Image: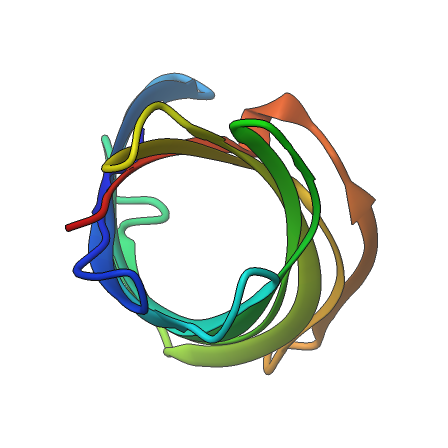
Amino acid sequence: MVCAMVASAQLYVGGGLGYSKAEVGDADGTEWSIRPEIGYTINDNWAVGVALSYTDIDIDGGQGNGNVFSISPYARWTFLRAGAFSVFADGAVEVERVKPDAGDSSTGWGIAVKPGVAYAINDNFSVVAHVGALGYWDRDNDRKAYGLDLDTSDLSFSLYYSF
């Protein structure tokens, strides 16, 4: 679950935390992440921002251990409002650096549109959800990918606070 705080009607800061534990073959894997974010609301329909992300991956036996750092500037277009609900799309560019504990580091980039919905609980609190992406990704180890992914395994929630 991701939590974010909005600093004013125009400038917002926030962040997210994530944790997961899974079985990877015969080994257990643990992953945790932190994702600070800052943005600026231009008007009722547009906002711009940048999200940073640090993820640490630890799999028993050492296979696949390492960390990932990324920076992702985005533009958010809110195209539908209905009462307290709004629907938006984030257009984002992401650059990431993957540093495994063993082996060479790699750099990748991607461009994507990420759909989301928001619900304003009151004047100060909002709940935001993102799911999936439509985009293209290129990593320097010759892994390229593109497509639409609306899988709920990529579902994230945020809590925003405005003051």
